[in-house]
Image (cartoon, rainbow, N blue to C red; front, side, top):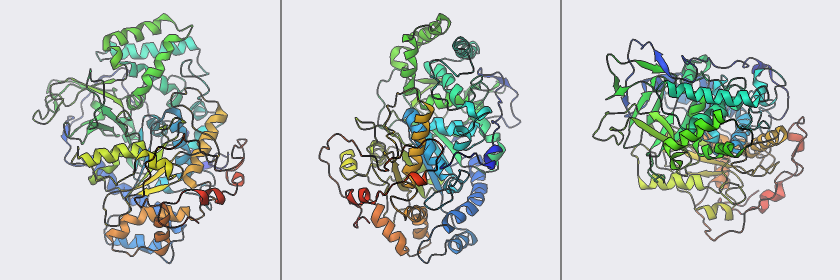
Length: 619
């Protein structure tokens, strides 16, 4: 993302995915496929994912070789190393990328990370850059604000971040216009028309016989910023991604969006909450108490005991893309309800919103109501077997604000997860490792037999006191481990103070671009200026589990990287002072046209002054 030139490759991506829902936002009856949709027990990956992975592995092979070949790892010939793995039919390194929640801040911070990882971004293949990591990845997960990023890119045929923020005209230039408040709507619509479309869309769903919640209004409003500014893309579904040629041919990573279950009337999310995932083919959970998946395209159908009755109808269109993203971010329903306090909002919108609140109760304003496809299915172990509705909420409400959960599934064989954390854990709205601590505590408690053992992480005070929330840290460096290595990439003030409030609902284009640029700097360590060997260390992290599987001696360069970035178990749990980090790159705010690289100042002194608890002295 260093420059503001739209690459030719991006010009080929200016078309949205197909709008395939049969009746706009309203779910509707469609012909059933020859093989009628059924629920499957979550005893492994779906047949679709299993088949897709075989193709994706072949697609990531050349990308991974190119990425590694541009990195010097001692005398290791990475091309030969990867070719030997492929020739022996051994498992190639498999990469996952997880984008945290945190509202628009997390979306923009994550967008900077993906721009840095994307070899289609301008200058992303130069020295100190990480272009190609995205093309080498198998999975890309998003949660809450992170789900907005993932969903928005995929419904635009997995377009580039650059093609959205640098476009000066055309369809993509109308997206991510966060200066246009979600309470007022896009610039191309009158506010009255915007309000009317929100009301009519949700009404059409209710008229079709489906429950409505505040999440419906929130998801529709989001869609005008993320999906289609002209009408909110009412017919865009998440399952339509499966039919997009780039995804179906495994040219892109597999998107995963995360939500958690909160039973109707339940006020607190338990630590053993059921984590639901949405992927292009299915929605469901591998967690005990559900352990089942249903075909996402037909989720509005009347499933009973895992099937649609012989005389039952197939219903499509429930999985509206905005509603899926809204479900993962339903904590923002409360923010959306600020619309009740604004002047000039017509009664034709306020009336239905207030009626919806009255129907579900104020305590349930954060829920999303989904038809339960697991009704009467496997009643011996299914806690929702007698419920016709699933009530799902924001994926971060159980404090697991980085969507690591689906990437820890052993059957997915993920070697390394790049965990991009744009959370606002501290009073000053910077991350402090809370999401990692929550996932570690859940793993340690053994709530799900399908979870990998999550590596040990320190407490939040240690994250701050040792500077682990201000620089990358590797967790799980034990060479004997077969579980994913976690590369923690916390938001920090490299070139811009991006610590905006999670519930800040409006950003100027300058603020948007500066936050995205800062996210780019976070994951590249300022184009490698903070550490000129950072790309080598990223490559070592990718290969770490593979070295163990192939019984390959760890190269000396990788040993140096692991000494520098692997947490060695040191803790300091004393209560820290208010966390107010210094800007890492001096004069980092750019004028919107310059490359990132020339703006990077000498930050080696800051690097050396950070607390060192990684094994060796910092260099």
